[in-house]
Length: 214
Image (cartoon, rainbow, N blue to C red):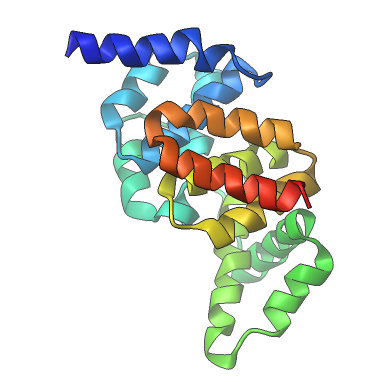
């Protein structure tokens, strides 16, 4: 096991960590969401054991950001590792929808967002509503991470999941719309590489290339 750990640690410390311009703080929360997707609870604890309170708040928000993409079960398991302080912020369905739609428009544009909502088949309109109220209204509107950070994390979450290329391409566009760059996306997926492997990484890079090299 020591031999295996040395190979991984040398790759991460001497190569991956030296690439790109992302802050160490951003790399921590990228690894956090990557580990959450992979249900790597020991790795989450090891990564976060020495963090101060302010950084733990960002870890909490990073874990919560995973919820609409990987489902509540995996996130609940990760959240149980910590004694996070609860924040009671109950909103009405109408407020959640309104605020979520605004965030969705910030990321994907007013025209594209309204087109998806208005053109939804009758038996799928509830899904569009949930996207606004739950995915964007309950999570993207939270404090602790800004919109650029949340959208970059979403790119990493989808990349770590694999098999989500349609959504991944949409969120590559979303990242560009909120001010992240191709370099930011490449740097982020590079952080994920040792944990998710080359196939998922190369699929994510193909999505980046398809959108940014047109």
